[in-house]
Structure formats: C-alpha cells, structure tokens
Amino acid sequence: MIDYQPLYNALVDAKAEAWAEILPQQLERGFDPTKHGNLAEWQALVDSVPELPTAQRVLDADAVQIGCANDLVLTAKTQLESQLKALHPWRKGPYNLFGINIDTEWRSDWKWNRLKNHIAPLEHRLVLDVGCGNGYHCWRMLGAGAKTVVGIDPMMLNVMQFQLVRKLYGEAPVYVLPMGIEDMPYGLKAFDTVFSMGVLYHRRSPIDHLMELRDCLKPGGELVLETLVIDGGLGQVLLPEDRYARMRNVWFLPSCDTLIGWLKRCGFKNIRLVDVTVTSIEEQRTTEWMSFHSLKDFLDAENPQLTCEGLPAPKRAIVIANAA
Ligand SMILES: Nc1ncnc2c1ncn2[C@@H]1O[C@H](C[S@+](CC[C@H]([NH3+])C(=O)[O-])CC(=O)[O-])[C@@H](O)[C@H]1O
Image 1 (spheres, protein in one colour):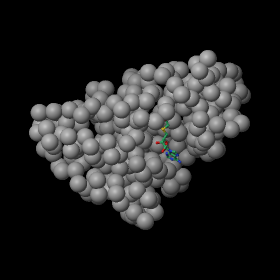
Image 2: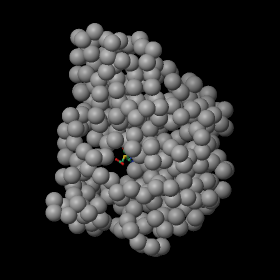
Image 3: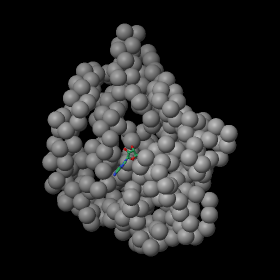
C-alpha cells in the first residue's frame, strides 16, 4: 500500500492545497475496483509480490535497476518474472528488476538522453509528469535529484505496473496517480517543472492542453514538451483525416514553428527547440514484454518515411519553455 501522506504534505508545502484537499476522493475514485474490469485482479497481483530486500537501486543508468539477480533464489526470480509478465504489455522502460531484464516496447531512455542536458537541474524541484505511462521517466527524474515527482496517467495498467515497481523499490517520493490532465484543479501554479511527453497529439484541443500545463507551473517554472511534429513552416499543421500510424486518437501535429507559435500565444517565454528526431523501429518495437504490433507494422512497407495511411512517419520534437 502506498502512503500518500508525504505527497499530501508536499502539495500543501507547495501551496497546492486545492489539489491536496481533493486528492483522497480522486484516489478513492481512481482505485475503485468496480469502475475497472481488471483492477481487482491487478491489485491482488501487486499485493501478492513480497517485499524483497535489496541494497541495489540505480536510477541514473539507462535501465531503472532495482535489486540484482543474486538477491533472489531461482524460484523467487521465476515467480517474480511471471508476476511481471501478468501485467503485459510493458511499453515504457527498460527496467532491470532483480536481474529480470524488462525489454519494453520503447527505449524510453533514448528520449531521456535527448532531453536531460537541456532541462533545468531537477534538484529540490517538485515535478509533474503528465501522461507518465508506467512511470519510467518519473524514476529517472527522481534519479536526477527531484524532491518529489508526481506522474499522472489515466490508464490503469500503467498505474499498476508503477505500483509493482514501487513495491520493489520501497519508500520513495515518487507517485503515479490514476487521472488525466483534465482532472487537475485549475490555477495550481505549484510545480517547478512540468513534463508533457507524447500527450499533446492525443488532446483534441492542443491550445487548452498548453494552457493547462502553464497553469500547473509556478511563474518562471519550466515546461518540457515532447510531441509529434511535421516538416513545414509557421501555420502548418496536420490533422489526420482518420487514423495516424493506426492510432485512433491522434489530433494535431504541428510544424516546429507552429508549435513554438502556440507556446508564445499561451504566454510561455524563453522557448527553445532542443531536439527533433525521427522515431526509429529500433526505438519503438515489438519485444518479449510487448508482443503486439509496433512501429514497423504501422509504417508503409515500401516507404518507411510514410505511415501505412500515407502520412509523414513519426517525428518528435522536444521544446522547453518557461511560464511567464
Ligand atoms: N488526458 C490525459 N491526461 C494524461 N495522460 C494521458 C491522457 N490521455 C492519455 N494519456 C497518457 O499519455 C501517455 C502517452 S504515451 C507517452 C508516455 C511517456 N510520457 C513517454 O513520453 O514515454 C505516448 C507515446 O507512446 O509516446 C499514455 O500513457 C496515456 O495513457
């Protein structure tokens, strides 16, 4: 069971009482097993994982590492592996848990490596990671010195994967909460750094998303935004007619200049484009821990520069900016 009292205290310290007050009800609603078909089963699974003592916790290497192979006898390792596999698919990672190498669909460490030297040092910072998946980057943020990291993600499987990893890690000021950005109270202005990575294109109203992110930040706080972009100039934006790379919920893909223009209109300052990278089939792929189709299957078989719908293949930009 995660103790949320330290999170409550951290929010009160950051003058985010508006959130602290409604947090208990949000958690109760989010973890209500009657609202989600698999939740009771996943919760029982996490509960059944024993606390495994270890001195090994590494958060500043590519794989988030907890424990080593020698900490467990073979039977315990086999059991942990099957418990982890029961939470398939593992999309974000990699993790190395007691010698079990979770080779996830995404090499999320590559994204972290692209941005880590461009962000303000995270030491002493209260950090929000919007759309954090199973919390892989939250652990990296903690490893980079953040005081408290709060991830939010509405997908319950992600939250339960996080809970399992956190149980293995033990007490730590890192939390993943089952909620979306739309559940954040308005006008918090409490976080020192807010990450939104891989979320903007899932939002029907990208400007509202940027406003919501700005609203979570203290004045002068830093936004780290990562999203799909297209080639093109100011004003250019792609709104797929239907699916994009087989995904149903993809809305606006701006050019980098358009994205920067949106950030300016939303009152961000000091806007820097720090990286643009085409997503490769080495970075996002089918693995033993995510056995469904992946990027390779969503691209045009003859021309990998196009998706199977004939749209530009995924290219992602990282933009950093400060709230005014
Ligand atoms: N309304 C919402 N509010 C918050 N999160 C949401 C919402 N809707 C969807 N999500 C969540 O946003 C995440 C997007 S993945 C990025 C993960 C990580 N950030 C990464 O950068 O690797 C996309 C990608 O694969 O790049 C998913 O976990 C959704 O559940």
